[in-house]
Length: 216
Image: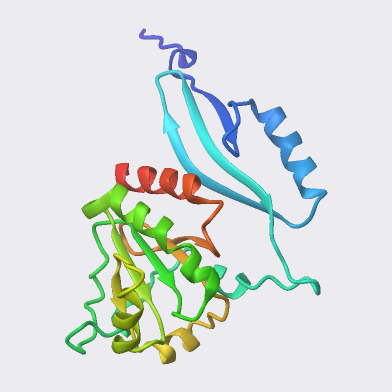
């Protein structure tokens, strides 16, 4: 009779929260409880790292930023998490609808912005750095209601190294996106996995997300 000890293959689960040192499940649950006392808890699994004897889950714990009346400006957009982003509703530079599989095969970063939006402009250098870091391993796209000429004039003073999809007011309205910037991260199948506002304080998390999405 062949007997195999399951303990040989057991992996201990650890949680690395907001960049801190890994902790066990008990400490993780205590941290969640403490964070939730400050507001509505938002928990994001950024990446899972598997080793021979352990699994480390990289977690971002925070509270949702809301307006004074308790409104989450990204609440409607977060409803798209887990659904496929319908790129085929948008037009390419030849004024043809994108193929529905256009985003398949690579993770994707989509930035909704416009040229008169101060926080949108503020994060452009960070977005360019993100694009430079991952190059052709991911898709980097902006979507705006501005027209081509407006974007071209803007980029004479501020380079923005993404693929641009202009003239998209109808589609933006259909998505009910009203907070700018809005940033989406999609997996290799075009499924929305994360929704961010301005990324100024989230760049390291986003880099980690892309590393995980590219590996899987």
